Length: 352
Image 1: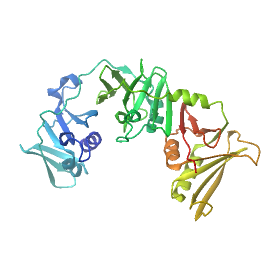
Image 2 (image 1 turned 90 degrees about the vertical axis):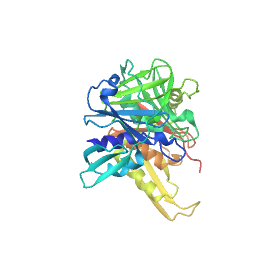
Image 3 (image 1 turned 30 degrees about the vertical axis):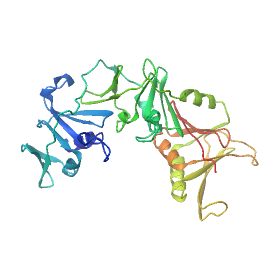
Image 4 (image 1 turned 180 degrees about the horizontal axis):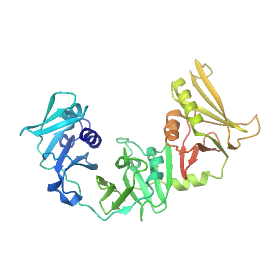
């Protein structure tokens, strides 16, 4: 439905007072004015934040317009049943009753979607979707880590605390692409990709295209090498995914700092969450999870314990789509490793 597509596209519009006002908008582009995108009827809805853009096709015949996202926000809270160009504004009739008048902006200088390049099927996406959350968020102050690194052997993402690797063909040569180009994409969506000297194009079917600038001048860490070097170290155990996720969520809800402790010993993994500092614990939550396969240290006097940010562990476990997940740990100051469905992620611990 039209209002849902507008919401989807608007996520990619610029935000904040520091962004360009013209990019805090959504462009309506009749398909007849831009046949290069492969549609002869309907309308393309376009947004661009200065780095990443999106174009989604709808069957509705809409007027050519550039509309501010703040004006559209209320109008798309319910299905839209009618659209009329009023000259200085566009009238959007809501199914909930009433008509929203959204003013036209001057479209001069607003960038158009790039011409379609020759694309190749991109089968790595289901794997990358499981670890792309490891990339740093926008405005992190670390622009290199706001990218995903594509290599012939896979794709990698890191924010320096979390690190993920997805196996498969990323691209023919190393290239960095904006991580937010993958936002709100269905993990199972079949994707096609094209990369040239300046940009990436990503197609989800023939009705959604995304594009963004690429970088080849930045040095990216060898995430795969780091993870592979850890695989033969320490202890590895397999535990039920749901049980661990539920337990970590509970531990995080107790902890004021979101810190959780994982203790590996024999055929069990202990999980602890607490509130307080030092030896004073106002509240405490602990649980013991059975190990499905593998084992931790067998000596009760020397369990392997690691402290991590529980919010990051919850985020990682939410991406796990298998009944069990492998956890690996060496020493208390070494990263916690997770492996499932062919992908790997690690989380560097806190030093409490």
